[in-house]
Image (tube, rainbow, N blue to C red; front, side):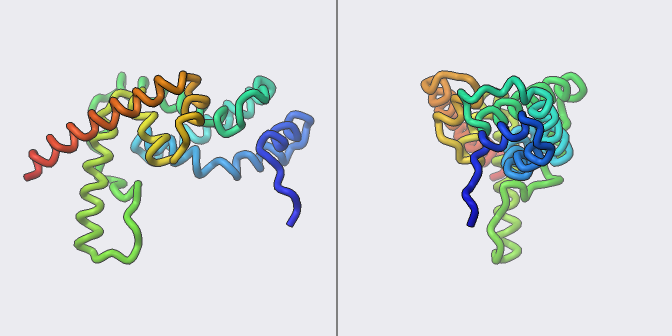
Length: 192
C-alpha cells in the first residue's frame, strides 16, 4: 500500500501542472457531489449537470483555492451554489417541474435490497413522500438537511461548505426538521 495522498496534496499537484491530478479529485468526489446535487435538485439529469458544472467551476477556480478550507468543503460550497443557481432558473421556468418528476426516480434515497416487493413499494412510496416534503422546503433549509441527513456531513463541515456560523447551521437544521415533521404529518393525513 502506498501512502494515501490527501485531497489538498492532489490539488497542489494540479496547480503545479500535473494534468492527471484534477481527474483524481473528480474520481474521489464525483459520487458525493452527485448525491448532494441530487438531494437538492431531485432530478437525475439536473444533478448530473450540476455535478459537471461544479467540477468545471472548481477547475477554473483552482488558483482561487486556498488551503484554509478542506477541498471537500470547497467542492461542497461550489456544488451548493450551482444547485441554488439552477433552482432559481428552474423556478422562473416552471413551478411544477419537481411535482412531475417526483415519481420518476422515487428510489433515490434507496431501499435496501432483499425486501419483499410490497415492502419495497411501500418504502418507495415513503421515500417519494419524504422527497416531496424535502423539495418543498426553502432552498437554505433543504441544503442543510441534504448535507446532514444524506451526505452525513458534520455540522462543522456544513458550516465550512456554506460559509456560515455553526449556530446558523444548527438552527437551520432544527427549523428544517420541524417543518419536515409538520409537512409529513399533513401528507400522511392526505394519504389516509
